[in-house]
Structures are given as structure tokens and as C-alpha cells.
Image (cartoon, helix red, strand yellow):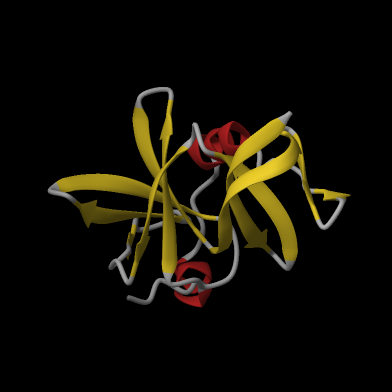
Length: 128
């Protein structure tokens, strides 16, 4: 069985996003933080898209379709896309299993994340 999708680096480790989630990858998009929250927004294709920061600064935004909603993820480094041995929950890269990125879990965490201080916002890397 083969898994199709996007291999990314997340906080120094490999992770996988199934092709069914990924709409596209965009580079050098301006992300504006929401005051008091660790979320942002970006204008893409005439639409405002929520952005969830998952790690350190990255120039790429991985834009996904999650249950009909467009959501972008920052802090992931896209490495390669294509077909991988294994299945979508644990594809293989160099004969090693790669965990699937828990997209829905990250969205739920973002929805219920408590507001943070201004200082914490300034520490985040929301550079264009």
C-alpha cells in the first residue's frame, strides 16, 4: 500500500501530512497575529485564512482543507511530496515510519488556547 502526501520537518522531526489534507504550499505570505492569541491570519486568493503556528519560523505556509475549512499551518518545513511506502498513518521514509501530523488536534488546541501576553506574542516569529 502507498501513502501520498507531504513530508515536513516539525520541530526538528519528520512528520507526514496526507495529500487529502493539503491544498497547496505558499511562500513569503504576510501573517498578521491576532492580538492576545498565538494565531494569525493571512490573505490568500482574496480570502482571509486562519494560520496556526506549530513551531519555529518558516517561510512556508501549508494550506489545508479540514472538513471544508481552509486552515494554514506555519512553522513546518516542507521537504518533499509524492508517494511513500506504508499507509497514511505511518508512511515510510528511508524504511523508517514517519508519524502523521495530528491536524485536527492542532486545530482543536488553537480553538481552546487561552490568550497570551503581549510579550509572548512579540517572541513569536510572524515575519513576512
